[in-house]
Length: 390
Image 1 (cartoon, rainbow, N blue to C red):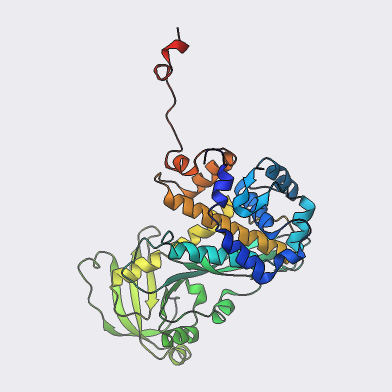
Image 2: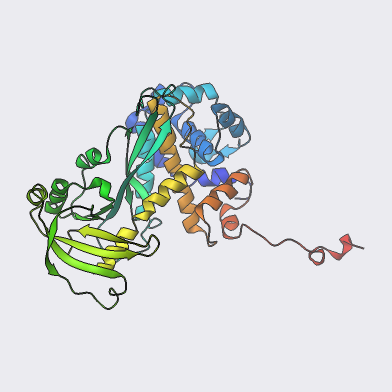
């Protein structure tokens, strides 16, 4: 690998068949002018890893990475900014979405994206939340949010196996979180965790009937009464304040959710506050319920890492399609970086890994040897041949 740059070694993580399948399914190469979907994908991933600020920077940067790209069927093709602009307008972002989802499924089946906790739970675990990306309304008039402000909202369902999105819905930010959740189709026999912004007892009851376990935070002011108190184990007593079965008593809520629910109250040491957790599961321990809800923080970390380290807050194209292409390629880049982090023996923080790779993107060295030992000790005088110091 010494004669191949880090960038090309990272691109090797994408099986050629995944790209070809998406291209053939959507016939995306029919709408290009001199720049294939494959080269477009590589250019946009280069944009994410290098954090290029314009199409011109992508063009100039790709010049310096010319070489043997036969693993993707590319032979010294230089993307021009005019071609990139045209493709961003005319190649549907769905192609890049499908590439991302196929890539995610490929590495989950391969065992490289797996959960680190709750392996005893055989159900799929998902975390639901959204984040907002502000845009200039004068440039992105399709993303109207307020009178003088534009924004899009990323409604995201994070798969706990690898903590990568398995579902992403991007729309102008006027749509509320709850309206999105009501249209979300979940697989039966799964677990979903979310914050109280999605609270809708009619929706909860629909999930309950589909054998979907939900773990969320109970809003204050919801009328309920205790049916019975559940016993706490010795390990739970230090962390759990209350574990009880409740019945909703509100005029509307009792009709929308007529079954019993479980309320677990924990003490939050960080904020010196109590947290009331609501779930329809009665078999897990209170500590398991508490730890599951704490894992909801993974989606907040995901949003923070994505916004701080990849390019999704400023965009290289103004159309809705161009914005979505940039977001999907950011997710592909994030997935590739996560794979590198998981494979490395060195204890990388993801932000450090991204910055170190950005500085060494065109180094020709074995990527995995570098990942395992990125910082090497400085040579001293005694390390050199004595003949160099007569």
